[in-house]
Image 1 (cartoon, rainbow, N blue to C red):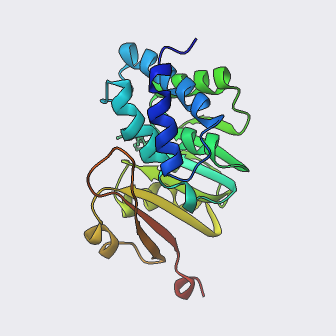
Image 2: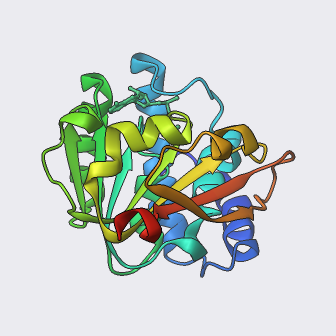
Length: 215
Ligand SMILES: C[S@@+](CC[C@H](N)C(=O)[O-])C[C@H]1O[C@@H](n2cnc3c(N)ncnc32)[C@H](O)[C@@H]1O
């Protein structure tokens, strides 16, 4: 029995607001949330301590980008406790997710989530992103609260296939980071995101290789 079932109505309503069919997704997300809450008490995986707060700040926030995620191979860099990678792996059909994280206590937690939830579309790499030797293997990379756009591309840009995209979650529109993008990359779009239950700015920046530079 999941100890967080009292949060189901709020979660279902948030998923509906994001345009996601709430069942059976809400049950799977709540199983993940219960594990995160349990492990967090001992291993300090996230500074957000209250499950209800985690629901909006972690689950719904991560899922607010789902309409921009395409089926295929996705690497979530600096995933921490699996964000946004695990919610996306649960919500987006046809997605193969590789969670990349360099802190071993976090990857131990991630392996336990994969085992307990039976996530056969999720793989965990205990590694720094820059050490992942899979050049061009991913259609998309995601990063939330990890680094600047230039920093993410420096450690993970090599992972993107030709035509692949970085989807970076940001708070305020990161105009200074966009201006500091390294040569060879261009911003394809900046989308404002709405997260049910959360105030404040959220943005998704999509970055691709610059075809002019590649030519
Ligand atoms: C602030 S946390 C954010 C975690 C998660 N993405 C989230 O949104 O809650 C940043 C995480 O990135 C990891 N990290 C930072 N640089 C990394 C790198 N180069 N390779 C792999 N993990 C990295 C850190 O260990 C940390 O767990």
